[in-house]
Length: 189
Length: 113
Image (cartoon, rainbow over all chains, first blue to last red; front, side, top):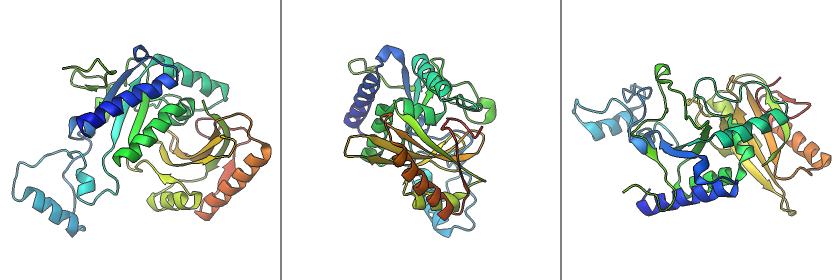
């Protein structure tokens, strides 16, 4: 994504959230995953068994040659470019907002729902109720999925953000190094 | 806000080939990766009526590993006839993909009660 595209991406995201009735003060927006950090988490190793896939092995060989210092984790888009995934890497969007989470909880309860509203392992709000509660945001994600050719995948958490699930092998809890998405005019220099 | 109008549980587990069959027979756009256990939505499409009413169909995996198809409408005035037609179409699509469908008596979020 170019800087101009990213500005459009960010501004249109804030516009979509405004159509749902939220102001920038209501939420914290961060880009997560390999689209923000370039490498995937430790749970996605680049140590791939390609014995039965000579084409992918040839691509790996062409990429790294004899270099023993190859990455341990998968770089952004690597599985797609090696022909091991039929879809490019996605844009993981982390939205943290107590007011949005509370709206989902009310809609969940009003429908007499069962099970866990909050995912036990990763802490996000059930994506069915999240999508139904905020259709403008879902439409925004669909539009940007088409525009970028990559899945744009929002996930909703309470304002405290995702829990620290490092022990489970992957965690997207708040970090100082996170890629925050700021409203227009408040971009960090 | 969209209003949940229909939920159909899909019995049994779904592998990659089964997922592809479901997407094909339900005419859904692809979404999500089966290998990513945080992914919950795996296919979708939207029906837009001349009246402006939008109905979104989605294929989901709940956090307990169970699968379902649901339909949500942009208004709450979807007729029983429209829901019946959609239900028949989706049940038929799930069966054509090789799975058994169970329609929830009342549409709810979360896994099957």
